[in-house]
Amino acid sequence: MVPSEERLQRNYFQKPFVENFQWRTKNPYVSIKESNLLADVAECMRYLPQGALVLEVGCGEGSNLALLRKRGVEQKMYGIDLSYERVGFCCLKVKDLIGVTMSATHLAFKGETFDMVFFRDLLHHVGSLKRKVLEECLRVLKKGGVLYFLEANGRNPGFFLQALTIKAERGLFLSHKKNIEELLSPFGGYELTMHEPSNFFRVLFHYGVGFPTLASWKMCTFLCDLATKTAEKIIPHTLWAYIGLKMVK
Image 1 (spheres, rainbow, N blue to C red):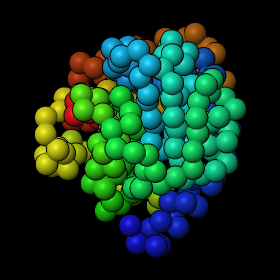
Image 2: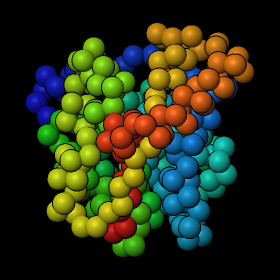
Image 3: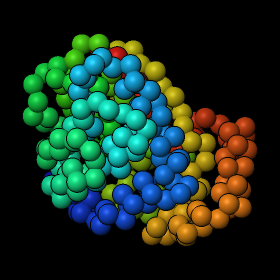
């Protein structure tokens, strides 16, 4: 990543994050959707051996890890992120977490340390270093361990609009199924799934641009659920919001 791009991303992730954590983990509707999005991650962890170690790369303020704990995940978890402030907050909010400040492109762990490595919404922020990130994740993953990641789909209308309006999110233009499959082709077999047919609720209930209090209105959430069920039937999978990828080393 060129220095200007790196500065752009670092500045972007200096924005306030406490509200984002509260929104993802406490909002009565969004928190359920966020938890559901992580269901496959939690399922993978359920089959890990006793004493397994799990690493989230780019843990941010800890929303994913906190929601996994709520889903009953008990493994010892590590979280790494470039932001010292976010890692510190994450350690306060997530039970039994070891948080470390470091780069996703240079993981300061020995090879084959973790039974599972996962990340979310990371690759479209690292520019030309995507392959390096994947190589590092696989390096620290044990033989037979699981790599799982979720990436926003830039072909989804909501995320396409986000890329248009936020410079630091422009990597979403290249974040889609075909490019991810090409990126993964040298690394062996994998399972790819699509998630969240409609993400309109993320705008409607957003704490910054939407109306988060509407998530407490049963009629509003009922209509959102109805819209999601309809979207499942009529929207092509290539336009769904998230791409999930599972790979066994």
